[in-house]
Image (cartoon, rainbow, N blue to C red; front, top):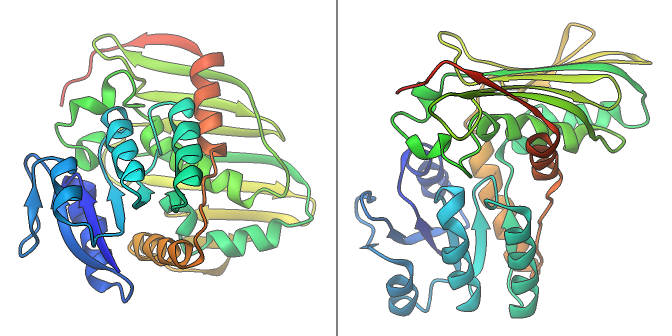
Length: 303
């Protein structure tokens, strides 16, 4: 199936392009970007021109930042093409509700992706937790924004989400594996004095679960979550890719490179079935943190 990739930045080149090159389902037939390109693939400066020039491209994958994504997403769906959205699926929940309804009206597939749900240990963790009671949990999600988003000032602008850009990955795993719903009870957000989005956050969630997000960690990156249950202790490490039960290796793989191939396989399945997958539960928790969270002002941040 022919696919166009929109927004040729770091995440597209690091993850989307290699996944598409290895996919048995997809042919990368065009890209749209103001600055980036993929060798050997036709490039367009705007999405409307690409859609008009390539009616045979049935699916578009959007890797744009959240704020400018909505207009492009609407254009894709109105043109009758299937749409895959990089996380988070929009700048606001209302935008994604509109896109979901538009996709249904157009009879096309919409996939709001959460790449961390495709991590190697997530399915095993979900199966093990089924029917068990969570007594307490701890999420530690700390990474270096300079490594993963070098010079990308948009991530600290309004709508850029700041530390919730990686933090929502943890929340996407949490809402996937828990055997019961989870909700936010309290939050504390640290905003640099020169930025509009938080650089760190601490969340208190139901079922005794606490989360610590920080965008300033240097050296080794930390993407861990641990749960004490009525049947033992479970941990997911390396962003959900390594599973431990009672401190013993229980499966997974120490690599983050399997997530995007799995996303594109899932998108192919949705298109063939003519169905959509739009789960907003990680984004609901993030929105609730901005609504309920207290705000601290911390030192200015510069790339």
